[in-house]
Image 1 (spheres, rainbow, N blue to C red):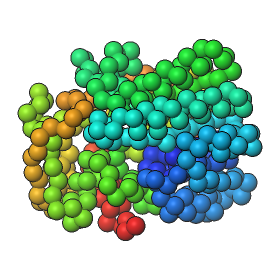
Image 2 (cartoon, rainbow, N blue to C red):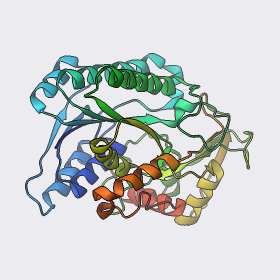
Image 3 (cartoon, rainbow, N blue to C red):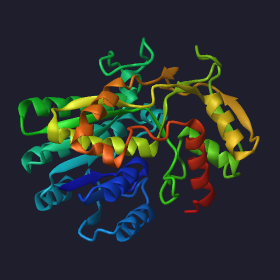
Image 4 (tube, rainbow, N blue to C red):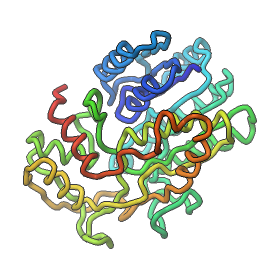
Length: 351
């Protein structure tokens, strides 16, 4: 099976690529413009492949921007791909409020183009990286996949529009199937410390907390402490990046047996910003400085997943041998472990 992955030099994409190398014999082609991803991450993936006992699997890296439609079409035309996993996107919510056109062009427009190329070059399976931001301010927590979709920021809208394009295309082309994963908050790093969140200006809470704990930042800010939550700070569902990554392998296997679908990917439990910071203080042993600032535009008070649908989907796939890879879907459902792996990565990451 030949897999094309966009954005696999980045955080989540690289962990998915790592697990495809480790757990399958699929050949990989990676497209990334390295605007937020790192070439060193690609080198780490190549080293993981080199150290794998099986010598038949291949990985190719192509530095290219998805907005270069002509170059991207040539990659599709030459690739003979069976499936696409699409990560490449802009993801910073406050930035999307300030610069919405960047998000509609980089996220929605580029997705439209690659969906078109999937149809043109007979790529029959697509796994799409979406977000819980499509739910906006959900009225019911935890939120399930049938909840009302009402994003409150351009980032969420750019992903929801992309979802609609994918779904409508699949209705028109019965040979095109998809899995859409709506991520909640992704954190942590590879347990062997080979890859992690490498973008220096990342806004992910757990990464920022880890950087503050080791002195890379002087302080960490909590944006708003007057939300209608247990301690006044935002509540999120944090999932370890390796558990999220495995869901994508599951998605590829799912499409071999079942129809297109949409799944939340989270642990189904919420932690407040303050709880996360306190946990990082505990695992690091550092009582780092915390300040309070005004709320950020586009931040909902709570986002926690109802994850029963993906758990049931995994149960359906066990009979196809998936259990041999991962005996359970979520292995790292532990906030302390997530914080420890993020902290370990920051201690050793010097790029």
